[in-house]
Image (cartoon, rainbow, N blue to C red; front, side, top):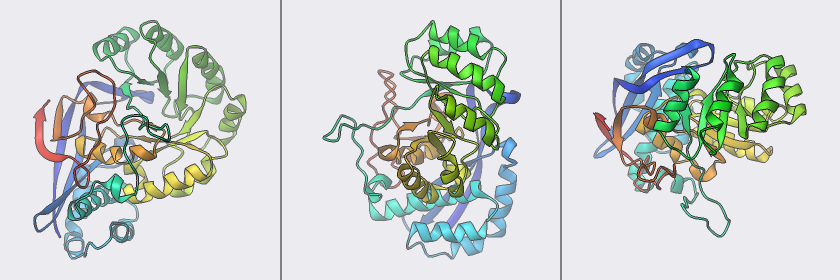
Length: 354
């Protein structure tokens, strides 16, 4: 295989803020390309400051290990992941980028989209099992209330995910609810104390909020036990559920988990996490770290296996880096059109204004 990699900076339409005042105006990412003959696969790893993940650090590791990666014989993507997992044991984001590219390349070689290689079917209308893929939400980052309302008005969408973790969370959701009857989900990004959550979650339930992501600090097990016992809204683990080993523990404290490909180290472990979670009776969401078209297409390939999906990175950005990922912009219905091309099902393009 031949390995290539480069940096990517894609701007957000609005500064993107989550709890604890963490704001970014661009998404800085590492892009990788693995090629073999006429086939090529792409992968992505976003740089996330609060996880101490930098593009520079990932590039340094790639250059040190370029030769051994290029010598690997890709005869099975899962075997490739195990090789990468041992090569970069402390760098799940980098492993994810390469695992993603490996799966994309494998799909190109097999001339099949990944969801078919995983023996799943992607339906856009109700089928005999009465199931359809989940609709992608649109995330509203933290802002003054009037700005959040305006962002919602400017972007009509069937489901909104709202970042919370402020002293005006209830006022915020009340104002948004006054302007829409669409489903609202909230994500506290571990920004609440137990006492705050015990008060806020029932109030949010009264406002028609659908679910809450990561209300408390990732290791606040006592608090999560209280929230689950309160049973006011479905609770989803995000920061608490990072790796495969976390799934079983989360089943005792949450109603569902949010899997992030970058954090769990790729598509390969995500497949195992979904299977385990469903076996434990957990609902499964797959979320994004503001990935571009490439990383979002990887998430989309899991749609037939998911209950919820948050893959709105390309919706939040003013530039794209690929074609083929269709969120049904024409009627704002959020349905992702099936990706039927091989591998990830999209084509990489250098960043362009959408």
